[in-house]
Length: 135
Image: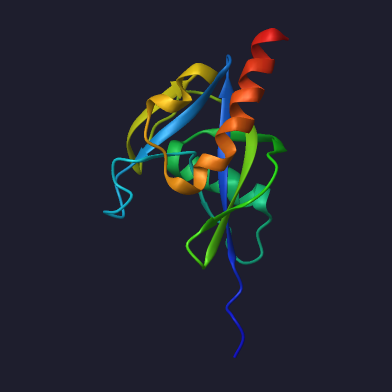
């Protein structure tokens, strides 16, 4: 028997007015209170983009439009890996699985305690947010 395939988890860097949406987890216990880019697991037969649109609709009741993908992937344990899309969404986030949400600017990304798999994407996000402010 070989190693089980690594499952993809998709995260959304939802950008609005030079800020990115961060969501605070309530579970599992080891992740509760930590912040993440919202998203979830890709189900069999779904593309990464389809999974992300579905997850954001479920978690935040937002209509998501994927605009691109950040470079790289980040391991979540040994069974999953995180990839992150940049996206826009209209409407006001209504969190169903998180107990708090916040919009962070480039200089505020260090203000919350992120889940470890999200950390490698923060420098790219910071650069993107800063570019957005200058355009």
